[in-house]
Image (cartoon, rainbow, N blue to C red; front, top):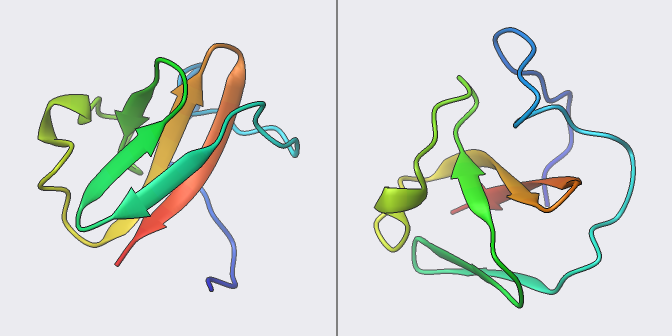
Amino acid sequence: SYKGTFTTNGYNSDTAILETLADANITVSGGMISADKEFSIYNTLGKDVTALNGSLLPGIYVITLDEDRVKVMVK
């Protein structure tokens, strides 16, 4: 589990997180994030790192699915 405050460096519509639950099933395993719908992955600096999926370094990422934003942690 992760406890603490999550912020990004600057506001970006792709990484802005609302306190809601995503309407999707998201899993994280072995540096790979998967979901049951199209998504993009952003690091905490707001950079799109979707192309690195499968070899993501440990850390916090923001997943965008349609209008939903979800933060996930890769161990």
